[in-house]
Length: 163
Image (cartoon, rainbow, N blue to C red; front, side):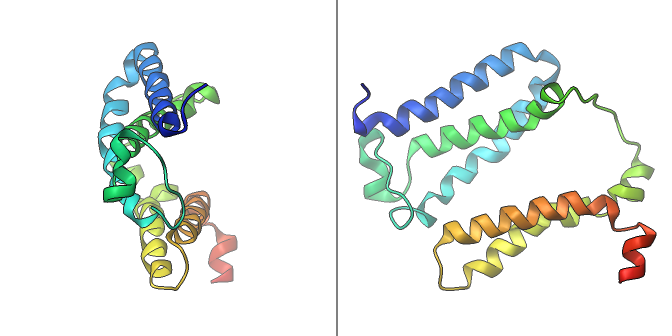
């Protein structure tokens, strides 16, 4: 049985163990995985938005309770960012293809930057309201997912006729 004070430590470390296995298994994706992990690890620094209003994790030295930050959140964000960056193609048997610069600038890829910016914009706007940051985060992730799904269709005749 894991003591309550170490549950968050054990689970964040478990995700890091999965990260290590995935990193070892997919040699061709290591660089992408490492960059994604390094890019997403700082998201663990958003912990003060959620502690203690949404959750109050026990962990190393009670850092979250004393400072609002903890080491486990950095480990967790590092691990899930890298795993998420490389997991989709092998899980869904998708082949990766390079997209030429001309195709990135037009066609169905034209609105990807907007889709990527949508969660940040929605989070900031919702954070101005009176509710807990977790609800702003949920709304931002939902909006980002919808923007990503809809971005390839923004140039279709159907949507142009609606707008």
